[in-house]
Image 1: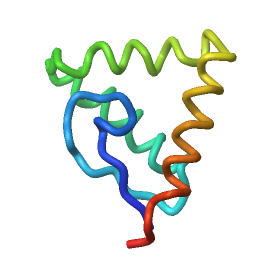
Image 2: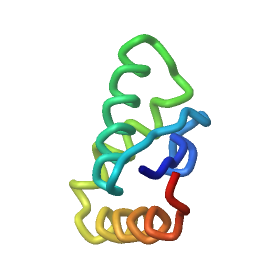
Image 3: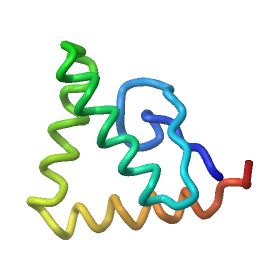
Image 4: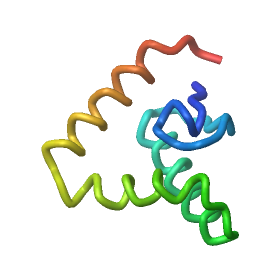
Length: 78
């Protein structure tokens, strides 16, 4: 299990997001962003917008995705 923060993924806080894979951590951040913005948090609104727009621009989205996977792989277990 590895942990990245919301901020590590482009968000606005240091909430730890854990997963066995980078994809699990990314999914956890997606859920976090949707939930917190729906609750009225404006600090995360730009990160949610970026998340939604990432897949509308596949080249930029893949660049971000590969960077996250690389950063996740470099993290120590635990």
